[in-house]
Length: 381
Image (cartoon, one colour):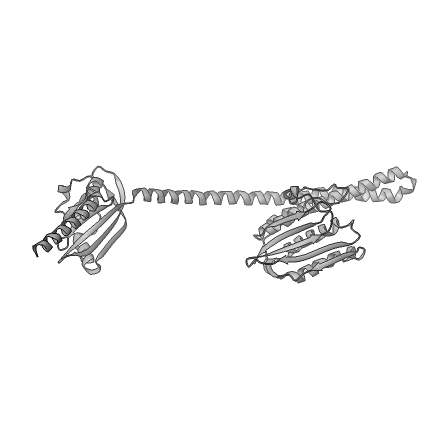
């Protein structure tokens, strides 16, 4: 019996010693309060060092009697809350230490049973560094929001200037081009019979160059408008949109031997006018670069396997391109073929990329020199 008591006492002392070590070494402040009076019975070193008091100065006082806690609710109210709820918590309690430092703490009080006695334990966690970090993040976010507003205003102003410039280009350049074309036509009609073959060739070159410049201006304006136009998204049946787009090329297809292979296509949500511009550009390219083929083959379909986006491809058996330079395809004025080999302004694919990016998709291409090309674009479902 005495042996059992001795072992129990040893276990109890070991448990108390273990608790005491944890209490003394804790990196949070700990207060032990009397459940009836709310007065401090014990305090660990972390807390009295944090507040700048000695242990003796804190023992026997209520929490509210200590100057750092002067703004906390009264001892009576806190005890009533503890007796009712068994729990009191202050998320962000500002304190002023004895040496005048301002800190923030998380203050949590619990009532728990120790044998036949109830005690109150208060845990005080220093969150000053965390609060400083949170305040810094809030300050940074406020500053960031301010900068975003400022940059957005600057961008809107720049877009307005660009739109004004585009309109000016459209008006100021097209008028003289029309006059040049008009006079060239007059010369060809009125003086054509008296001009040499060489001079007639000069007039033809001038006429073609001016028309090319007009096309370039139109394409640049279209590229500018694509970036500014507001998207008007709707449910689009791609089968119907492709069929409608192909009618634009009916006159050209009648004079050529083109084998079309069009697979069933999905429904997507997109801006009808802009997506139609994408299809026109890609189909036009496929027809242009298969122009030298006795039998052109153009295949249109959807890559299977994605639940989040529709990936459309347009494949042709035309001139193709060197895959090493694929990244240049979608740049403004970038061309992988000579102008005298294939006509174009070098803006069509840049427009395609811009439109697809605005829809949240991607565009890419695969090709082999003289082995055809495949252009892909994705539209999120």
